[in-house]
Image (tube, rainbow, N blue to C red; front, side, top):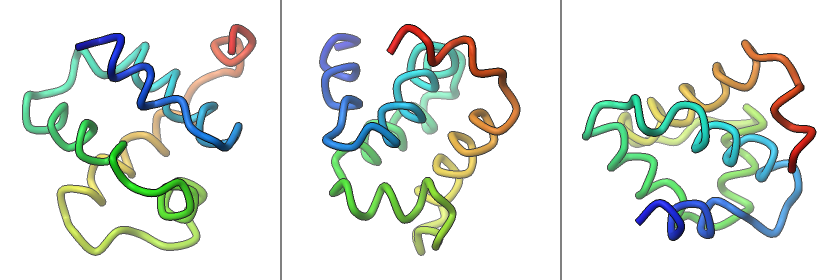
Length: 87
């Protein structure tokens, strides 16, 4: 399951990889089951939608999806860039 999540978190856009992979590596296991389900659901979305949401150009209408997007964005904004060097 974890390898599948990692594979689906790798996107066609480098910007998305820089947000999704570190979040998966450092936060996913500590999420509540409903937030893990929201992440799994989120990564089924199209790259252009993910890009708009994760770049904060707009927020998803669905409250559950909006919550996980905000968690990813807040994590990226609150951490150093050392974790991105391995991508």
